[in-house]
Length: 213
Image (cartoon, rainbow, N blue to C red):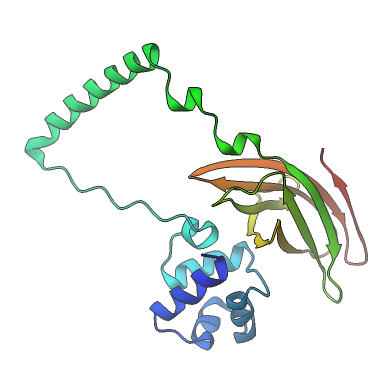
């Protein structure tokens, strides 16, 4: 399920109209409509606002990762049994790891072999924004991608990429003089991998970029 579908279904489940959601998040109804049709992608600030408005987990809304169900509370008279079992499992795990190679030792993560084969940057006409097209070397089932971006020396934001056939696309806005370091965040089977791809810098009249090999 794509980001646009998660926003649409969550809004319907809450019984909100596009106008209602737009008012809570602080955007126009047209912006919500574009999110739900995939014509635009909310930035990190709006994703956080959507999570609050729709009562959703951040990883689920941004990346489609289902939250883990809360563990049931252990009863008081069984707590000592849980501690004992945990100790036994810990020792057994050490012994098995020593004498029996684990799956992680024998089978590398599918993410390890994935690289970025091509990156394209295109200015968006009429607005202070540019579109990044990212083409990974492999496209296994379930691969999701976002970008971590932000000004140098500050904590990065995150924007979810939209899958488009054999590549992923995302639009990044900028204001004033800026310098962004951008990394691709790949997610597959609950594992993550970051790959630095670009340094982008400029101002509201022009911008430049350097590819990171």
